[in-house]
Length: 510
Image (cartoon, rainbow, N blue to C red):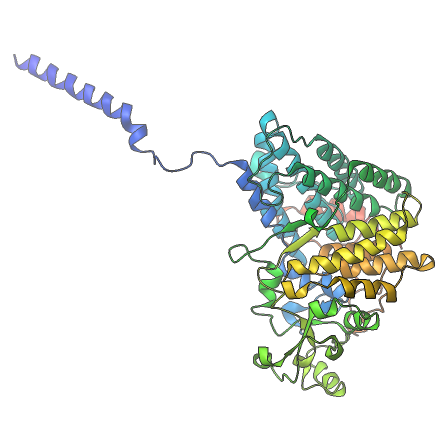
């Protein structure tokens, strides 16, 4: 009898244990937690993080003489024509932001959905965005990891090979051509993506406009391929208005890194250059009123108050290059200013806001590139018409920053009448306008300046430069690459040239 009781008891325990095991998974699973992340949300994260880092204020903007700081230390770079390396060096800004926060997400998404016909549009959107990210990376540094990039998160490839810039551009052109053509509005359109809300027509225009940019980048190194690529882009269909602009719409939650920098620690440290301000004043450009502010009489950062703010173009005075924080006070006195805090700055309450949009590829830029293509005889159309459309579009685009930044149509008409397109100076005029229209897009204005050699800027006269030439030609690789990917980096340097600011990227011909 005792044995029977023990047996029944064991049986009951086994039944109980079996029942507990059957419910164990449900008991330990959060019924409200997501079990899988929709890849479109990952895509949104990648797109938002494409905003340019604050480090572009240290290199790209000073190199093209639009904005710079006279201060040394962590702000040294293009202002003094010297490198800025180290664990938190400004030379690593684009590299770290794009590889960590853009490329790896795009590679992950593509790995998930490449064979899913229901997500084909999302797949092709990521191909276009990846092409954009790598254009920025390779234009900034030259040879970079491309085919192996991002695979460390999927296949433990933690030492990616560097691809040549030529091979990267060949693949970018292929990817943009194929992906733009493959977008199909009859398939799921991914309305949850934050750039175009799933509008396939706008995505196609973005893809082909980026293809136009890629083609024009090759004007000096491979004119034949450049022309063929441009013609392919035009045939595909380009941006038709500012409504097609590829833009990151920053917010209080997803802030513009450049605007955040200008409104926090470096609020009183960055100034518009005298060359930029004087150019806009000399042509009576109404955009100066949208861009600049001067805190008249300010003797310190705290004195840069709203009461002192003056946005009248007539009173703007840009800061001359060639000075540092030890020598700029005397120059400010010579310019009859209260201090160097009295020079003109980017208006931090409008274009320089922490939530200001980041424009990546625009209708204005596209029209100006078409003007150059027409000037070169590669496409049909009147270069002057494209030129006027590009200038007009950028002046109208400024309204996206703030309603008070919008240039009124009568002012646009008056400007174009005073500054007409002249065929004999076509390339200079077009690319100087591209310089203005790409303001705050540091990587793009730096790239087009090297490609076109316009505007014709005077060399930065600062005496302590490290470069041998007149201008910085590329940014050096981050120091972190030496410790984690030394062999691959060494191979790229041996092929491309010394890892310094003088080495030219493949498409940049003297």
